[in-house]
Length: 216
Image 1: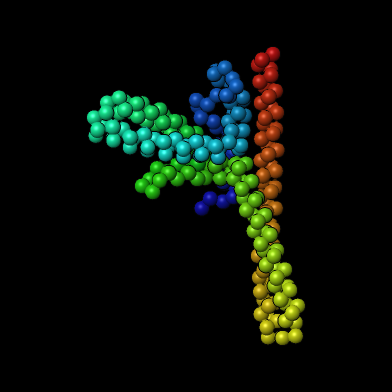
Image 2: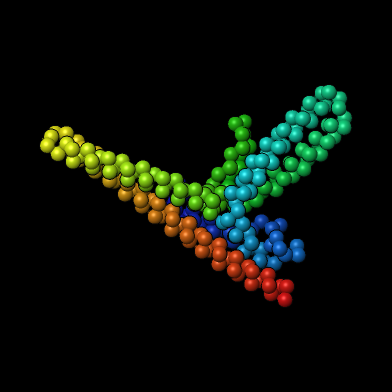
């Protein structure tokens, strides 16, 4: 079982160990360990979700290109086959590159019979995932608050019926506990998003300083 502590350590290890061929996108292509590490950390925290979207799109495009290659081959359409083959080769390289990036960012990428599955690592811990979780929890909190208000209203109306009132008290207690649980989860998710944003901003500032020194 992966505990919260070991999960955080694994995520940090991903940030501290960029792929060997990763270079600062605004660099000159030569290895610059600190700039490379910072740009990698920023990309993981703020952009891993985009890698997933790009991979899903490339993967679908590759499947379609391979399908068209087979059709052209069956129809003896040599020019079309060559064109689709070239497209498939390019998409295959894109799929391999994005898969390697996502795995280096701690994600699991599985290409199975039911389709492409991408999860874990910075895909699920990055800014986009945290923002989505905060939004979902805000919606859930609104629903829980509304349900609790409805129960309280019903409880007041049934105040003169002891047997029913006891059942309502039980439901109220459960609804209050459910709302409190969602509220706690929302607080944790909001704090996690704020922490990540602060870290990404700090890394961006530090990276900008290092880039300016190189230019100077």
